[in-house]
Amino acid sequence: MVAKSRKSMLTVLVFIMIAVAALAGCSSGKENSGSNEKSEPTTNAGEKPAAEKNEKPVNLIWYTIGGVQADQDKVIAEVNKYLTEKINATIEMKVLDWGDYTQKMQVIAASGEPFDIAFTSSWAFNYVESARKGYFYEMDALLDEYGKGIKEVLDPAFLEGSKVSGHNYAIPTNKELPAQAVWRFNKDLADKYNLDITKATTLESLEPMLKAVKAGEPDTYPIPSNIDPFLPFDYALEGLPIGVPLNTTDFKVVNVWDTPEAKQMFGTMHKYYKAGYLPPDVAVKQGNEHEKTGKWLVDKQHTVPFADILWTDSMQYPIASTPIHEPMVFNWSVTGSLQAISAQTKYPEKAMEFLNLLNTDAYLRNLLNNGIEGVHYKKLTEDTFEPIPDSGYSMPAFTLGNMFLLDKLANDPADKWEQYKTFNSSATNAPLLGFQFDPTNVMSEIANVKNAVDEYGNALKTGSVNPDEIQPKAVEKLKAQGIDKIMAEVQKQLDEWRASK
Image 1 (spheres, rainbow, N blue to C red):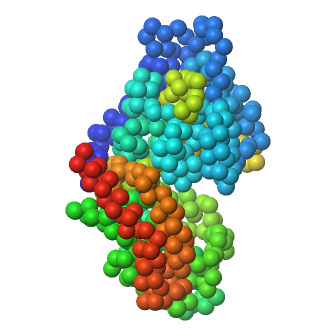
Image 2 (image 1 turned 60 degrees about the vertical axis):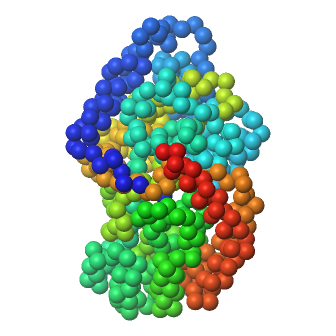
Image 3 (image 1 turned 90 degrees about the vertical axis):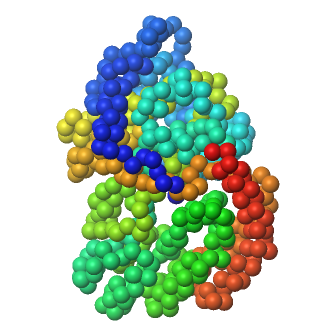
């Protein structure tokens, strides 16, 4: 999920690393980012150390996504000892399940139930939508006064790309910045049939590989699921086929389903479906069972540095990938993981102090992510660790803050985080980066068009219907449901946004 000025030289990467390390030993009571050893509390000039303050610590309620951990209370108790020393605060971390998070957080925010900080994203408890509803605190001034460390370590594109109506309402996680779609291959099958996967670029280039595997493995479907094939457009609204070409020069908004590129993709997928390269029920099939069985050749994913290693470790058989396009920074990739402050919080300054520490303090970040040394993990070297299986604590790293502060696993490359920074610096900006569409004037049309997308989308994308017959019907249905009115509103706002830049 934009020609980018962030193509940095090596000196820039070095500067970033130095800046992160410098945060450790200087002001704001930040911890040394190169070590997990706890240091004595330090303070800003003129501020009394937290230990000398008489006031009761502020308790912050923090909602995040994942699964409740057996030892969560034990870890948070250690976290709160540290936070009390550092910023005279404690946290109450409430973890909501992946599948329930969006619905429960919408109810909590709409009802006014107290909370101070919450995970938000482009895919769970929608960030832009929630900011527009007034659920989140506008934090520009807070960032300047209490989040200076965040601004020093975070790629500026994260903060720029996550603005809503020109303001920041959440702190993005410092992780991979761009998105890059890849063809992901089961290397065992690719090697068995001597396939040169480096030739896999376009959807059409897959055909001889699919044919070879299907001939040799008749009971295998080389494309195992709905891969949502890549189309070269930047979308203005999540889930709707409205956007501009990635190489646009005139920024004209189009109905993506009514383009030559979409027609070609739908046709190719139908050809593959008829050849038996996809399961008959692919349009309605759920889950990733193929990852367990190994009976598949290729799917489409988004990559990060060393993703092939991660996928191989996860599936326990070799995975290799080839890029479909160059890394690009999209609005949805920038807003894939953020922490927002509630608009109703009584403690906005303290909440920002905590978020600043979460993004600059290696001891706190690793404690929240990995748990307690000797209980939940074993320390291997100064910056590597090994989780203790079934220890009672295992949190999703990308949801909790600055990932570049995390210790590495034993089999991680030594330069893992430097490679992430290089990956971030290599990207270009998608054309709509920073543009956030306001749907207020076309809400009913959006709902109607989404229904049409749900009716036709999976069938067309999986090739399980003849696009010569169905694509014109789908385009006509989109028009009948109001897509032209939405496009006109997007074009109006996009033109205004471009004129204001």
